[in-house]
Image 1 (cartoon, rainbow, N blue to C red):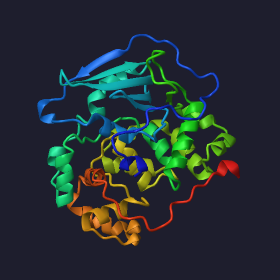
Image 2 (image 1 turned 45 degrees about the vertical axis):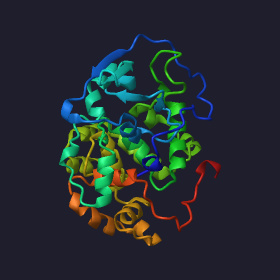
Image 3 (image 1 turned 120 degrees about the horizontal axis):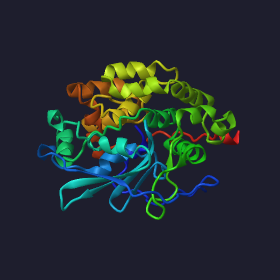
Image 4 (image 1 turned 90 degrees about the vertical axis):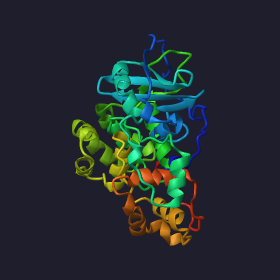
Length: 343
């Protein structure tokens, strides 16, 4: 779980304050490939911005922008880079997807899955009054499915054992320096959007560049091991949850926390509860019991006990709990920032 899980629906739409990589810029491109998708009637309401926001890695993520009611994503598909713009057409009751780049057709083919078409919230049965109220207040919540493993796995590795600000900075710097400008039309595409590097480019990033981005050897080594097995990692998107966890955690440096954070986004895993998180146990325990003991921030066993009635839907339950904004008072000092780039 990251700080973005606790955010509201609004976020800065401005580009990041950092300077873009030398020689960057967006060149004019062809007209977009367009797909209009009408959610089926039983699908119900859809909260597009809240649902897709779990893919954002900080307010200045170079691969994600929200502007003017639309969400933009820059992504690397099996067919190459793509930029996707998604916006609701309320009058027609549809969602309009526009895409540019070699991966445009691939990303549009999977637009319904990205928007949660494969998710079935009707099977969820609230067991606590707070959860029932959140379920009622957020009928548009859907678990998204990108079908792309590395683009969620790599930033999840960057978020291990550091503050979210440090992880977001590392992701931003690495994409801007080693990624490529997102395909799309100049003057329309939000500025400074980048597609993350491909596996070979990640593998060739020198050690001092990881150091410059504030990434220690443990995390960079885990990323390098993952991209060396990129094809095997991407296969996890088509596996059952237990098999996918086994596949991901076979890589040294990838544990249950990282696997859960990845599969929540890749395959909309409804039961992929995040374990090993610094804050989530305390939030869940406080929300469901009212307990305020600061030690509960570490009480993972108690959290899992409370979530046991939601077996099969524990991730959805935690999403709904987070949506209430009910958090315990902070009693411990904030996790200290570290900057290895200054060492």
